Image: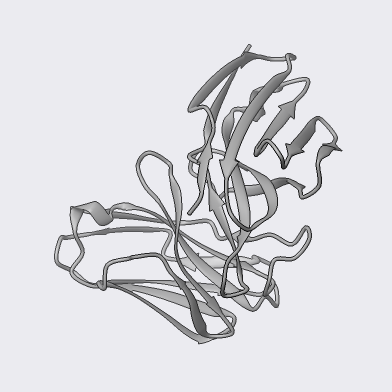
Length: 115
Length: 113
């Protein structure tokens, strides 16, 4: 039933580790996103993929590597985790060009805490 | 780039009316959205404006003036459950032809009894 689902919901890990967050959408959308929401609740876009192709990369460190095996999935892998990576990561999806009232729909978020 | 400004916090009383303002600057404006985000949850879509004027949807209304780069979200008959963060977001069509949604920092609304 869930439109945009991401796992895990909570993740606590040590500095220096590598971790992945998975996202899947069943809305038939062809564009997917990763957003980061920091401790001040500022929601900022990181990446966007359209039909498995990277279309937006907002100056995110190379330690973050998105992968889209197909248009319904967009995973986020983070290498060498740092304390500053602690945040909530939201996956989202939309129709290709978000025309008209079409907007983006968010997953429930993944709470990442780096200790 | 884009610049979206909205107040950080607002307080109001149950049953009252509150207006949350948002100003923006963007080069390829293609729509303005308001989202609601309760603590610990994902943002959810509330309203959409692309033409000037007021869009009404139950207790919530949203207004847009493109020439002024200004929008507001009006919440009537406030209920305790309306306590949440309200995010103003601007859709912009870039040179690639793809649209992106950029969010303001959100306005935390606290409704008290």
